[in-house]
Amino acid sequence: MPQAKVHIIGAGLAGLAAALRLADGSRRVALYEAAPQAGGRCRSYFDSALDMPIDNGNHLLLSGNRAALSFLREIGAEDQLKGPGSAEFSFVDLASNERWVLRPNDGPIPWWILQPRRRVPGTRPRDYLSILGLLRASKGISLKAAMPCCGPVYQRLWRPFFLAALNTAPEEGAASLAAAILRETLAKGGKACRPLIAANGLSEAFVTPALRRLKTKGVEVAFERRLSTLEFEDRRVAALGFGSERIEVAAGDCVILAVPATVSASLLPGLTTPLAYRAIVNGHFKIAPPPHCPPILGVIRGTIEWLFAFPDRLSVTISAADRLIDLPREELAARIWSDVARAIQIAQPLPAWQIIKEKRATFAATVEDEALRPQTRTEFANLLLAGDWTATGLPATIEGAVRSGFVAADVVLRGA
Image 1 (cartoon, rainbow, N blue to C red):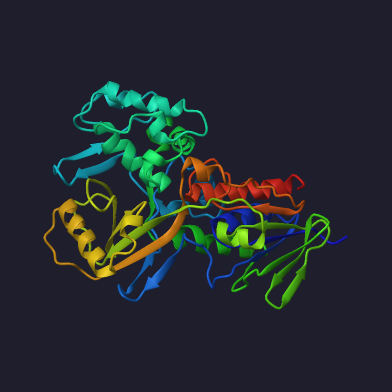
Image 2 (image 1 turned 90 degrees about the horizontal axis):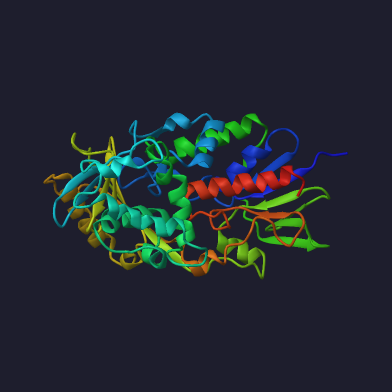
């Protein structure tokens, strides 16, 4: 009897994670990708304007992102993430020019809030208790209904933290998603919220070693293979259509659809998916950071929100950036650079730059759209879904994408 086969559509992080977990020899794995490269939104490319490789988006991970770190261990790339030895986050307020470093202690009992030099300036220990309402919040309410969205702790800690995680104005974000992030990271103490970045690029951390590991297990990606149709018979996928090519899905075979929500909805009429999306703007500037520049800097009351210092460039991320998406790139680069120069206190003219706009970067992490995220299993017996837009319980993050791939693979391994 031939060995069962799993067809994985999409070689983003969700698809790669599913393939890695399934490539144990008990099943054949076929991995298809519409693009010429793997990684989806999490990849690097050579930018001709800067004459250097850059990431298509800046991604910050935390040491509590257990699925993402497990993925990196599996592919032998855990050393690609760099960060401080303990949890610390540098901030600057561009309106007041105040600077501080947030230093949570390692353990879950947050005694760090008792020490003024470790907490947000101008705050008292009892101000941090406002987060308890979020941790106790019931499903289906917004963050602003669960906790006060005002005051220095909110503006200087919770708002930038949740804005980066949700890619949605925190006030309108789903309390359940914000609470899930908090429980897995900061609520566990500093050991779970050390900031980590892919110092050598996202592809070097997540994509290239994953492809290499899959190849050693006999799995290679079929690139430029765009799925155009799914054929169904007796409530199961019977065939895959790639243009003029038709691939039969035999009895006992499974299909994991690990493609964006809009693509999944076009292939599966009637599939419920999030409807609203939020933009992200990333800026890259070809200039070596000054020696005093921290590796990661949070920026309060500016256009930019997070500044990343790489050896050969400075990069910024602006979340929930719909307000900026239609601005001319030249105007946007000048505005962003003005903030960067002030944040790191340098007087330099605008260097070579690149602006990357993603209009539909992630689904809107609102209560309404959270309710529209589908489960891994579908109404078809041999069809599963994966992707950061599925019901992972997390916002659209690297952690959510990897976790969704692992979950889909585990369903197959249990005998979907």
